[in-house]
Length: 504
Image (cartoon, rainbow, N blue to C red; front, side, top):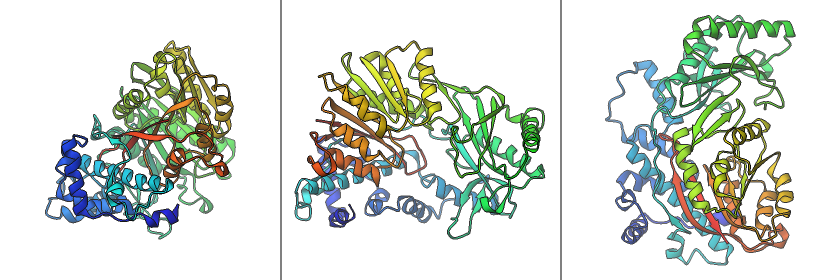
């Protein structure tokens, strides 16, 4: 793909503005695309170069020099807090309306680039077909805003490392890079996307660390014990905390002492102010450990968090994926449901289903829901949610989609309509999953949800739409991209979910 990418020409700003006028007359663009602001126009030429966050953060800093700093930040603390905000939430200096304009134009640019790739695969010379390369491959709907703008995250992961003052027992988010050796851990108190509850738990965890005789684990080969903190909350205010701990060579008795100490701190000590619903402890000798690799140990409280979404009561395990913006997720799932067009004769195939919310929310409108998910705890949550809500036409499978999907689809070639929904991680779908989808003639509709339409996800879409290729085992009829709907789940950041509808 690198060779193809070099052949795609950069488009002039003048031509883009003329195209905006053309689309606005046809009613295909929302009001904020019909009247693009100067800031957004200047941004367009760089959005596809790959360093999206850096461009936004730099532009915000340069464009807001005359703006007064927030009064609640002290001089030294404020500089660190603002630097962190510019990295974690690069759009925080803009109004939310302006953020939506920037995101919409970014998604439009991504689709234009995708159209160039698809044209080339179909033998169109994009270097001479300038008007065609400026066009969109599908109908682009207005961006759907997040119902909640500030403090929307229901899950936050805090690191432990040296703070601006050099204290290695600081809990927050990183500035700098490991490669450059300039990592600084800055508290998250003033990040707009982090709820106060999450920052409160992080602050008390820091209090605990600073009174603990054990050192934090900053780098694995250098020793230390205390590591990151994960905080999960639901819309009812229930709070789950998960502490990751490197056991090093501690005995079981010594580990028990540490568990009891942190448990006591959050039940009867200063940490009781957090009013945790549950506290988990995980012994991890790796950067990331799943529950299967190293089980989460419940020190006290409820083992799960429950959420109300789309008239369902949903169970969420500590290890399970759930969209980090609950109110935004409801908008996202409604959008997916509308695009699927399912009916009572449809089998809904939910790939990378997480806790199964998309499939279960549509179960009453379908013949059957089949879900596939790698995380075993998430599958158990989906099965519990189905049983609790009286849903009897769902089936969930644990494992890698590329291994399970072909077998599931073999029995679906009898003429019954299959609608597939895929919501993969940022790494995209395994190429064998794409093969299975392409080669299953029963799948006539596919809804693809992506929070980062770059790299592997771009290749996924190209392989879904490209002409049949026996060498890649893409034997089935290609899909055609019909509609795209941006849904903002991440205010103050450049990220956005893009829901794509394919048919064939």
